[in-house]
Length: 124
Image 1 (cartoon, rainbow, N blue to C red):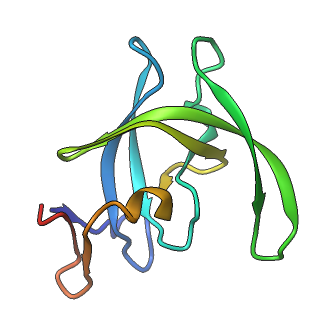
Image 2: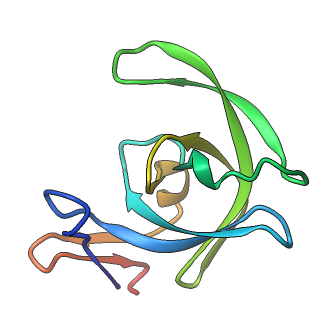
């Protein structure tokens, strides 16, 4: 179980602690907000290493205005709780927290308990 973050978000938001694994030697801790409106999982761009050996890709994304743009992606493994997602294509964004999108959320049983301000994933 993860408590909602009421310090960094108003209203409080469902946030979990995760680890990004770029390679055997490159890891980063991250806070990720649950975002069922995001098609793709996103990570803060300042966490993306500039050195190799990390794998990059390209995707097309659209925002609320419907404009489609070509964006660089990066492949990472994401670990949180007892879950490990390997070689996931994520979108770097200008943010201090990541967004856990539907590409990963659809593989999980997620419970948002607003009154208790807690997040449960697969009963944990």
